[in-house]
Amino acid sequence: MKTLEGRVAIITGAGRGIGREHALLFAREGAKVVVNDLGGDARGEGADKTPAQQVVEEIKAAGGEAVANYDDVADWEGAQRLVNQAVETFGDLHILVNNAGILRDRMLVNMSPEEWDAVIRVHLRGHFCTTRWAASYWRDQSKEGREVPRAVVNTSSTSGLFGNRGQTNYGAAKTGIATFSIIADAELARYGVRVNCIAPAAATRLIGTVSPGAEMPEPAPGEWTPMHPGNISPFVAYLCTESCPIHGRVFFVHGGSIYLFKPFSIVDEIKKEGFWSVEELQKEAARFADVEFDLGHPLAGMLWGGPGG
Ligand SMILES: NC(=O)c1ccc[n+]([C@@H]2O[C@H](COP(=O)([O-])OP(=O)(O)OC[C@H]3O[C@@H](n4cnc5c(N)ncnc54)[C@H](O)[C@@H]3O)[C@@H](O)[C@H]2O)c1
Image 1 (tube, rainbow, N blue to C red):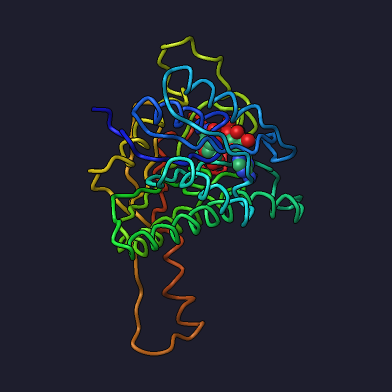
Image 2 (tube, rainbow, N blue to C red; image 1 turned 180 degrees about the horizontal axis):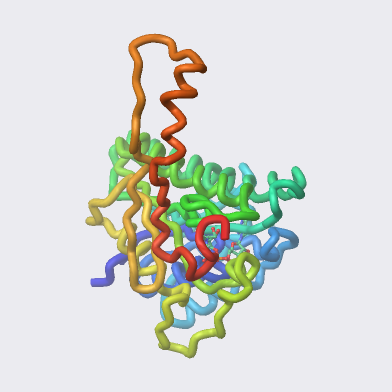
């Protein structure tokens, strides 16, 4: 039996790049897929139905089931239409993969409010709107006694979790998405929903805008390369299988490697029973500057020259 047989999945931003690979794999594994994509450019400008349509045609040609959706994930009503379309077309919703994304990189000192808002909107609000409508559908199902295993996989980035210069907007949104996932998991567990989060790294049109040197030629069909976007999808599919026990976790997925993150953790402490004076802190707290603060990026220097590089 296929690992996602009969599961109904929404994949956002599935017309291109990593989302397209998710949609094709999910369909091969037996899922009925709603292929969402607004079809704009990498900055999030414009709209085009072709990318989502082509992925649906590809899935159908291979014998799978899929339907296209062209809504903007950050549009409140659009996100509701997306969730409704899955339920109306395929009878239920088991899986939501929030993957749609854009970039508007700029050094902070030059960043416009429009560049800030556009990136925060598509990523943070785009994760919120779809998850919110799916959650209210799942709560209703649970109240009516129809509780089956459900899964959400969100998409963060090492640009947020490790930091990357020129991406205060994107990094803030992507770190927010990791925390959003941990909290949503805690809230939705009562309805049988597991929420996890991945930070991928793969050669797509987006990475070309961050690190022009990281662009790679299109791999030949069937050829494995560490930056192939198809490397990300099997783990995302695994997280969405009915029997997967993992929830509330954040992973970095690249090539054949899957890394599990530890959340923010405390590494040092100073303490006093009472109010500190600033003068006391001048003596006691300065040592925090010397505590090792290694972010532990496994690819530091390979892709982006490390945090800030
Ligand atoms: N490629 C990487 O190395 C990398 C690294 C870290 C994170 N990511 C994240 O992975 C996800 C996929 O990115 P990708 O690299 O495949 O890029 P991509 O540009 O190839 O694909 C993103 C897709 O999202 C769609 N989209 C954008 N805004 C949308 C909206 N408002 N509503 C619906 N669809 C929308 C686009 O049309 C596009 O098809 C993004 O969230 C990105 O931030 C990618």
